[in-house]
View 1 (cartoon, rainbow, N blue to C red):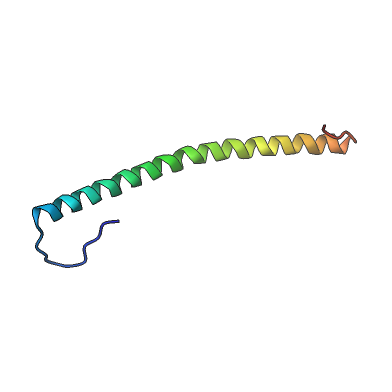
View 2 (cartoon, rainbow, N blue to C red):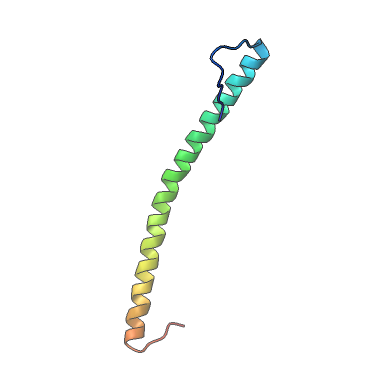
Amino acid sequence: MTAITAHHFETTAFERVLLCAASALDHFVAVRLERRAARSTGARAVAAANHEQSRAVAQAFGATGLLPR
């Protein structure tokens, strides 16, 4: 993350360009991480539901004495 702790500072044009580029990269990464987190939450929920369903079926087969192949 880009952070400047000084209250007043002088910058050159090149330094301002670097600060703007760093700020843009920070924003890009933050948006990308938020988007990935939103997608992965849905995928995790689906995977967890599939796992629970498969486990329930395996337990039911085990209760009747059948073993999955």
